[in-house]
Image (cartoon, rainbow, N blue to C red; front, side):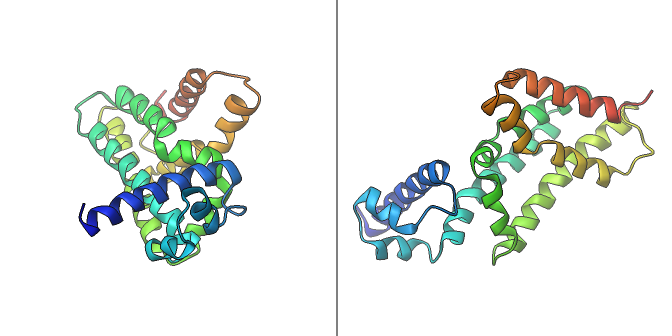
Length: 197
């Protein structure tokens, strides 16, 4: 196996282990040495891959955000009606790897918007917002969505309604509703607010 391949394999093991540990301990209680202990490798090896915890968290989150953005783009391009597109998009958002990771680490991700990765995080978030705008524009063009409310405002409101804390509270912690009921009711509530008439 080439050195590059060994590096890539080790890097994936580091990422997989870090994700498991962060989900279990939380970002603030997690240490880089936890990975080296778990994988039985030198701590310096971890730092050859990631200079800081923030870089490691970014390496975990960013691909999940890109995948979510790409799924939204595929949904928009699939030629469905607005309502079907909207329902699929909300389900994909709630079931995305990004959202699932946030369910366990939500308060910890804020660090990425304050550090050196802030521009990349804002860029990918802007691209996700743009895909929600595209969905809303489809609804306006079909005459289903109110045209008198700012598409920017609605896009940000949709994203904020997908806050993982609410899902965690109602589905995971208290089991007051099933995951499918949460997705359905969230979708219906959002549609109710943006439909004409």
